[in-house]
View 1: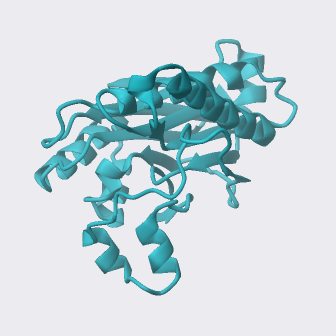
View 2: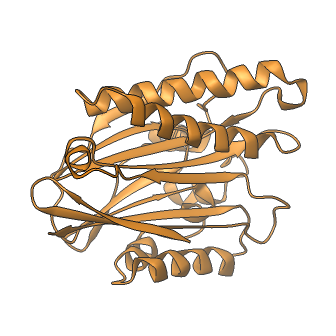
Length: 261
């Protein structure tokens, strides 16, 4: 469990808590997560808070390597970026992660073909920005409602969009773990990078998680966990629910709550 609080611009504070769990079926945890809060007040106001979740894939321990390397690269690249355009910095950070994972895969035969999802979010005052690849997700809980901010890059999600599967069928389809985009598998990857289309307000919570959580826990249940006054307990509640549903995959959740300063 990890967490921190940062004051941002527009008289906002952001509290961050995170947790990860092996689940009940996997021998190792191939999820990684991290966040960056600038240590200097002026820089915090200018750069915001960065959150990253990655869910690795590949043989042996390659998935673990891919997700860890992706998170580390996004964090380090964003920290060193100029900060003139936050969305551009975030986009370039995920591009850098793709290059780093692909380069490592090419250099080590035992890691060949490894890849990872990557969902990165920056919160600064009332604004939020996303860069996303794969089927990890970001949600916004606002005014008692939960809204999925990312679009899954997965086979079943595409089949749902094409009208060939219902959302209910997609949840049990045996192809539900097949992603159509991932960081590091190729030298280049298409990244969804965009501002969140709504303004953040005090009381809002952003949830970022791997599919080990959202694949077995319904959105309304995620909303309930993310709405807990104690964010650490909210993370624990979310992981407990996923394990109660069989814990078929690694589970990672990050909660970030906006509050008035």
